[in-house]
Each structure stands twice: as structure tokens, then as C-alpha cells.
Image: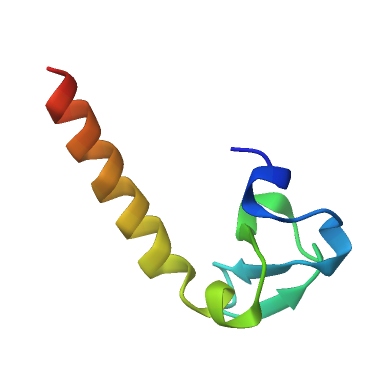
Length: 67
């Protein structure tokens, strides 16, 4: 999914969750391997782990339905 599909036009106006430090970053600041995102709001970035788990569950359910 592209950033535009998420409603994000400018990467500098996004929020990222740093999985190494647990910090929320405004714009991409750390190495990409340590970041989850982008997110449109600070609140979404703070829920990064929950959002990733929700998406993974949805993908598993879609794959199970395709079998």
C-alpha cells in the first residue's frame, strides 16, 4: 500500500514508531529497519504494534479464506 493510499502526501509530515527505542518520531529520523510506519497521527504511531497485529490477523484470515 502506498503512502498516498494511506492519505499521506509528504513523508516529513508523518509519524513513525521506533521499535528499538519505543519513541514516536516526527518524520523519518531513525534507520528504516527500526521504524514502523508511516502514520498520519502521533496517536496512530503510538498504537503501531497493535495496528501491525490487527493487519497481520486480517491478512491471515484473507489467506485462509482463499484456501
